[in-house]
Every structure is written in C-alpha cells, then in structure tokens.
Image (tube, rainbow, N blue to C red; front, side, top):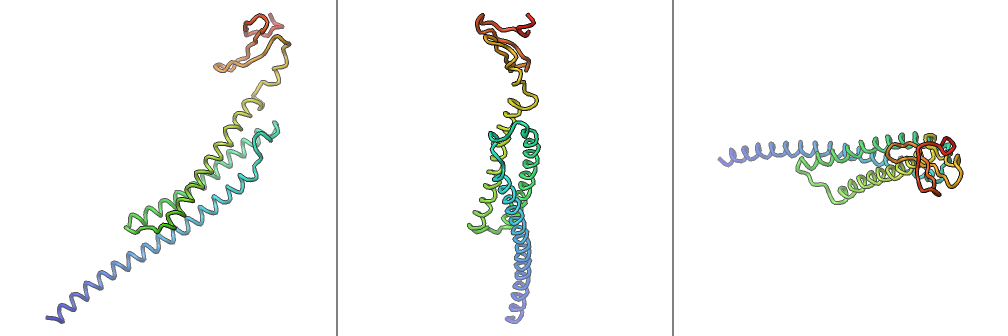
Length: 185
C-alpha cells in the first residue's frame, strides 16, 4: 500500500515537473524574444535619436532648402514609425509573458517603460519639427506670395485672405479694401 502510494505520488510529481518544465521552457523562449525585441527597439530608437541631433533648426534653414527638408522630415517620420513597430514588439512580448502568469521584475518593467518614453519623445520631437517646417513652407516656400508684397506702394498693402487664399489690397489712407490691384482701378 505504501509502495502503491509512493508510485502514485511519483507519477503526480513527474507530471507536475513536466508541466513546470514546459512553462519554464516557454517562458525562457518568450524572454529571449523580449530581449531580442528590446535590443532591436533600442538600436532603432538610438539611431533615430542620433539623426535628430544632427538636424538643423527650422529657423536656420535657407528658403531653398525647405522643400528638401520637408522630404527628409517625411523620411524621418517613417523611420520613427519603424522604430514604433519595434516598440510594439517589446510591448507585445511583455504582455505575452504577463499573460502566462509570469511577473516581470521592476528593473525590466522600468526598462520597458524607458523604451516607450523614448519613443514617445521621438514622436513629439518630429511633431515639433514638422509644424514649424509646414509654417515656414506656407509663409516662405515656393507657394507663398511674399515676394508680391512689395508690388504696391504705401499707403497700399497687399494681403492674402485666410478663408479663400486670394490676394486683396488694403488702402490705409482711405481705410478700405479691394480685390483689384490699385494700378488696375
């Protein structure tokens, strides 16, 4: 009877050890994937952060460089997006491990949080670069009409309507506006 009980307990122990071993093996595989994805995310983010450090401020760009800078900014946004896919992989692997009932230690959680924060900062940085670049292109780029401002003599002023983007003229002495150039009237 003791022998039979020992055999049953031994079989249960072997079964539990097999389950435990499988869980450890699965967790180890997931942790390796998490480690790999974290390395890829850090490399990708670091590369993009290095690129952003070399960019000249928008206010220091020459007018003829604005279009080229816009193209480069679009390419940069794409690289930030690609870095985001690596960050998503990190978050997915971390969630997968936690879904298995395994808690991540504080150091690993802080490391994952730092990766996410660096990525969010990159997104903010590119947004902060894109907005003034767009304004500069609208105000001074090839589509702007700033060079036409000097075509009228004071007290006249040329302006662009914000609603329909059409030019109009302001006579400051008579305090009225008109659509036609003063020389045409």
